[in-house]
Image (tube, rainbow, N blue to C red; front, top):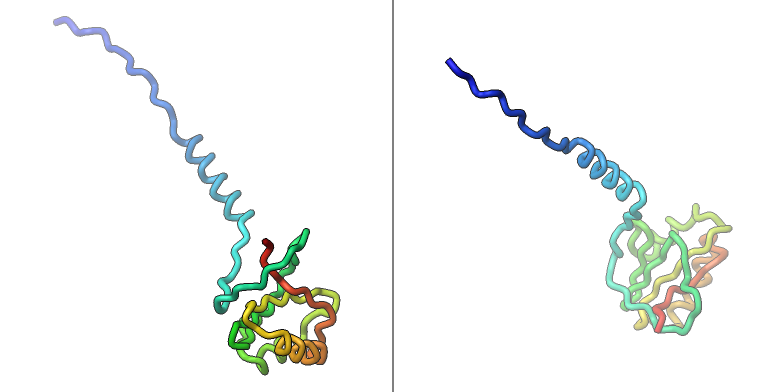
Length: 127
């Protein structure tokens, strides 16, 4: 009886290195991504000619109707009590709608100062 010589199959490429690379990329992008919470309501900031936009992490939102929001607090009383523990050296970002009158912003400033806010930056959209 004659047997044919056994032919060797070519070795397959291993997919383990590719899986390792994809896993490392996934971990890299998850670690470097900044996940920001959604805005509490739609705010259309006023336009301004600025060289550098205002930057900061803590944002006080003022809607066109005058509603206030800061982190999880909604309403003027809740926002002002939430700002009681705000650190003085950190500037607070004020993101107000362009429909909010300057008189409402001016009336808000003493209340923020009484709550302990010492530095405030107005967020605007660049042209």
